[in-house]
Length: 409
Ligand code: HEM
Picture (cartoon, rainbow, N blue to C red):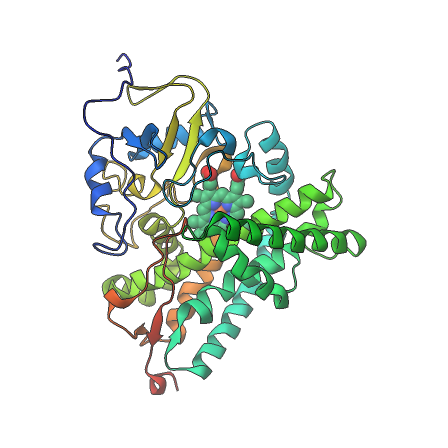
C-alpha cells in the first residue's frame, strides 16, 4: 500500500481528551475512545500546531520502537498536551536520559541497566516485604479508616527508591512534595523550576556524600563509573522522580479498581499466585503514565500514513492498552488474562528502567494489603474519591478506606 499524504483533512483535528472524571474513573475519556476507531489521526496540540495522535496498539509499538522518532525535549514542541507550556523547551537536564536519543541515551542506559542487578532486586524484594508489613501494622493500629495513599501507596515506593539510591528514608519529606509539584500540571513553571532546583541540590549533596563514603547502593556504585557529579545528580533525580509517583498511583488506583471489581478481588484473594497477572492487568487497565510524545526525525510511514520529518507524534498509552485488536474485551478488568505486551512501561529503548522494581513492589504489596484487611472497602462513595486528572501521572489524590476491626483478631 502506498502512503497517503499527510495533509490536514478538512475535519478540524481534535485536541487530546484528558478528562477521565466524566465516566468510569478507570476508563479513558469517552472522547478518546471515540477517536480510537483509527490507529492514528491528526491532533491539535495546545499551542495550535497539528501533529499526530496514535491510539492503535501496533502503531504505538512501532512508533516507540523506531529510532526515526526522537525523544529530545527540544524537538517535541509539547511533551504535555495540556497545562502551562513554555514557548520553547530547553534540552534535557544533564543526566535526564528520557529526553535523549542514541548515542547519548545509550551510554546512560547501559551504565544504569548494569546496576539493576538480580542480586539488588532480590535484596529490594526482601525489604519491600518488611516495609509493607510495617506500613500495614501502623495502618491497622491507627484505624479503622485510613487514607490509603498516605498510609501505604506513597510510603512503599518512597522507601524502595531510598533503598535503591541510598537516600536516608528520613529525608523523604525533603523530596516528596517537590516531586509532586514537578508532575502537577496545575503548578506554574516557577513552582516547577523551584522544586526542580531544590531536588537537584539535594541530589548533588548526596552524590558528594556517596563519593566520600560509598555504601551498598546504586548511587555509590555509579560513583566508580566515568559519570561526572553533575550527571550523577541528574540521574539520581530522574530515578527519584520516575519511581515515586508512578508506583504510588498504581498502588492506590489499583486498590480502588480492585475494590470496585469485587469478583476480581475475590479471585485474587482465593489464589494469591494470580498476583503477577493481576499486576500486569492493572498496568494495562490503568495506564497511569500517559501519554508519550516523540518527534519524527525523518519521513516515516505508519499504518499507511506518512508522518513527515519534524512532526510531533503522541502515543496515547491508555488508548493503545484498550485496543480490542490486541486485548479482547479491553474495558474489562480481568486478572486472569495475560496482559503482557501492554505499553504501560513504554516500549523500545526508553522502556521503563525500573519496571522490575515496580513489579516486585506491586506483586508484594497488593496481596499483603488484601490479606491483612479481609473486609477492606471504600469509606466514601466511589464518586467522591478525588482523582488526579491534572497530572502527567494519573491516580487518586487520596483513597479513604475502612475495614472491620474485630474480623482481624
Ligand atoms: C521510563 C512508566 C516505575 C524509572 C518509563 C516510561 C514509562 C514508565 C511509560 C517510558 C517513558 C518514555 O518512553 O518516554 C512507569 C510506571 C511505573 C514506573 C507505570 C510504575 C508502575 C519506575 C520505577 C523507576 C522508574 C520504580 C525507578 C527505579 C524509569 C526511568 C525511565 C523510565 C529511569 C527512563 C528510561 C529511559 O529513558 O531510558 N517509565 N515507570 N520507573 N522509568 Fe518508569
